[in-house]
Amino acid sequence: MLLDAAQSQLVLVDYQSRLMPVIFENALVLANAVRLGQMARLLEVPVWGTEQNPSRLGENVAEVKALCAQTLSKMQFSAVEEGLGEWLRPPVKAAAGNARSLPKHLQKPQGNAAERNTVVVAGCEAHVCLLQTALDLLEDEFEVWVVTDACSSRTERNRDAAFDRLAGVGVELVTTEMVAFEWLRTAEHPAFKAVQALIK
Image 1 (cartoon, rainbow, N blue to C red):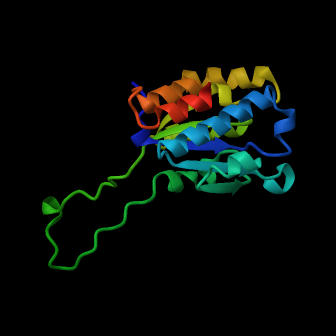
Image 2 (spheres, rainbow, N blue to C red):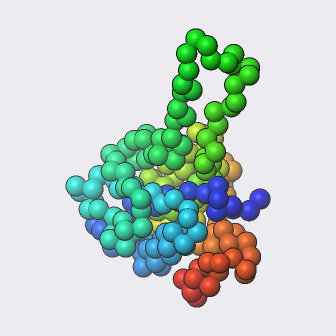
Image 3 (cartoon, rainbow, N blue to C red):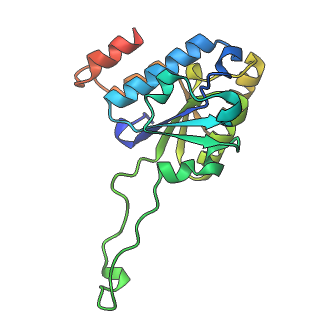
C-alpha cells in the first residue's frame, strides 16, 4: 500500500517556538516538517497545523505556520478532541428536498467526492500530542501515517516508545523521503524536480 497524494492530508502537530529548543534532534525534525509542508503544497495536499496551549508554549514557528491552511489552538493533547476531525472530514450536507423528493432507494449517494481519508502526521511531542492525535484519528477510521524523521520528543526514549506503540496498532511509519516519492510515484511527475530539490 502506497501513499496517494490525491487521497492525503498533512497534519503538523505542535512545532512551537518555546517547545522546539528542548526537543531531541530539533533542527532535523523541524527541517523535515518544513520539507513535508512544502512538498504537500507543491502536490496540492491540504496542510493543517495544531498548537498546544499557545499562550504558554508559543505559536508554531513561522516557517511551519506559513505552510498551514489553518492552525488549531488546543488544550486537549489530542487535536481530534478539539475538532481536527471536522477539518479533515467535513460533515456531509443533508440532501435538500421536499415531500416530492425521490424515495431514498432512488436517490444518488451523497458521498463527498473530495474526501481524503489518508492523514500523514508529524510533530512533537511524539509520545503525547502526536500519539494521542494519531490514535484518535485511527479510531475515527482514517488511515494514519506518521513521519518518523519529522517527529520527536524531549527524550529519545519517549519518541521511540511512541513509534513502537503506533506501529503496534497499525499506524504506518514512514520517512520524509518515503512520503515524497510515494506522493510523486514517477520521475515524470510535473513537480518531480521541485520536490527532489527539497530533499537533496
